[in-house]
Structure formats: structure tokens, C-alpha cells
Length: 271
Image (cartoon, rainbow, N blue to C red):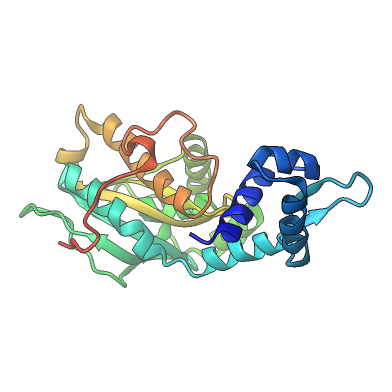
């Protein structure tokens, strides 16, 4: 380990945890002589990793670290990040799990894990469905700002695909308000009779909904005494993925599905 790098990281950790601190605080906090701490702090300030308030002389994190964080997030592949969690969710319930994003008024399934059962939902990566009648679609619509949602609703051409399909903007708007309150969406035979799903949003570090996951299967298997646990696990799975993208408000009620936000999965495993 390179000592100077180790000391620099410790200083950044200390400033991050304590915010606006004096050089003397840093020196004591990381166990360095004041002269040694000053040299490292000065270098970090020159690089933009720390900034000094000219009025108080105290130090805080610099914008260079924000730039680094933005670069990390920009290069994260949501499919690669999400897959271990999708695998674990599918394995627990032996049902199909999807990862989807919004494209206009449709959803695109960008990844999936198939159920091992003979009777299962049929779908394909790259496939599209209307957003208004799918669990992932309604979650993604619920994540839009009100003005953007209003404009999009005006473009949707509602069609009664099954007797359970929502067929007008007013009913969909009311449904979306419930989704925002509940934190998840359901599809009870809205796009295909006999099939149901539970879906939840994936958020980034700003809290913006960037994708949705769902667990789908035959209605008779999903709507039973265990459905409450299933919903909780779908929400927890989506929140665990959100944490990987910097979302810090996840797990307000505790994480039931992934204790300590960690799971052990063979990343090479694909069904």
C-alpha cells in the first residue's frame, strides 16, 4: 500500500463524514502530524478534491469528487448491476423477472430471467408493450414529473386488451397516484388474462426513476397468501439495485430480502 495515497483517502473519508473541518481537526482525526496533514490537504485542494472556505478556513469536499461520482454512474451498465438481484428474486419464487425502461408510451424489456417452470410467461429481451397496461410500465409512468406525464397521457391510444385493462386517462391517473403512494404496481390480467405481475421502480442517486423490475407469472400462483411477502421482496429488490446507483433513501422500513444490502450470487449464472 502506498502510504501517501492511503493517507489521502483517510483524509477524504474524514472530511466526508464531518464536513467543514479545520486542519487541526483533520490532523487529529486521521492521526497525522499537522505539517504532514497540511501537505496532503494542500495537494487535494489543488486537485479540486477539497475546497477551503476563505472566511472560516475550514475544509469540505471539492467538486472534483462529484465529477468522479458522475463519471462512475454514467458508465454503470444497469443490466450488469441488476442481474444478480434479478437472479436471486427469480430463484426465490421460480417466476419470470423483467428489467424494463420507458420509451415514449411503451416499455422495452432490456433484460430478464425466465421461470424454470413449464407454465410461465412468454417474453423476449427487446420486446415492447404499452406502458398503461403493464406493471413495469405503470411504475415508470408514475416516476414521471406531472407535466411530462400529462403530455404523455394525451398521446396514449387506449385499447381494451382484456376486461381488466385501464382504458382512459382519468382512470390511469388515479391508478398512478396509488402507485406513487404504495411504491409498487400490479398488473392483474391487464395485458393477458390469467397472468399477473408486481413491479417496483429503480432509482438513481437523484431519486429519478431510471428503470423498473417486475416478477410475473400465472395469476393463480401469484395471488395467494404469500403475495404480501412477494410484493415486499420485489420492492426490496428494486431498492437494492437503486442503492448501487447511489440512491440513499432506500430501505426506510428495513431490507427483508437482501440483509445488509448484500447478496451472494454467481454473476456468471444465467438461465
